[in-house]
Image 1: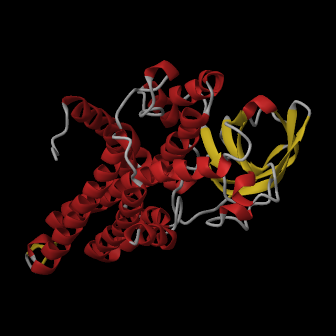
Image 2: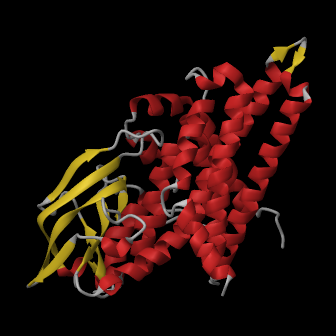
Length: 380
């Protein structure tokens, strides 16, 4: 296996890193403090081609391979965990649903502006009683002539309050279990009955609005159905498998930021007439942190490679997401420890990395669900 980045991959990495260092990192503390959606940064990322990285140019995308996309998202998340979630939910979830399961008209109409970043995408799957247990969802879509009438609600929807295009999952046949779930394209500005109930006040992931949505007799045209009725559950599983690679990328980015800051602080902070980085206890912490980051990157790229080869990558994506999410929290925790008392204050970014890292273990498949998935594949 060749681990050398191609010239294009290096170019993407360097371009995104420059954008992050110049535009995102100086704003990261402000975004975290205000929890406001950074619309100007998202617009700039659209202009740079970062909102549709893995999709073909014919649909407004950048035409990049999945390695490049993971590298780009890693860099964005290094600057801001919230911005990383905005891009991941927009691209890996909403964009991928349109690209994989939309017909040509749907791709031209909805995917192109999503890839160009002029429209923001969201993925509305979870409900108060249906998180990991997707078939327990209660949102329904009843066909009425040339329309579907949708009633119900969704919870924990990243980008939900700012999205122009929402991929919605609802039951078209409540008695058919997972085979009765279908997926639709919803346009909040056009579809009466789409209601944003509010957004969550979260531990971290600031800047990315996590919304509660409600649908009251919301009517959507039947040509907004993705695929056929009953395909929604399979659509969701396939999309989440790919999305786990990008959550691994977000995890790696946050862990890298925590490591970089810890290395810098350890070289500057002096105790007992020497930098604390010279003490073996700190040196060993940094060694373990870096080793974990490098291992997580390898798992991430292994899963991306299989996806690009169109081979089965369910176990590998689950392993990448599981390991990367857990080490991001561990590395961020050690970053706080190395900063000592300062790490527990908002004077340094160390505490923000920890808050942002924790989410990686929860969304797009909890660590417990991922272990079940991995265990099932190991025993096949």
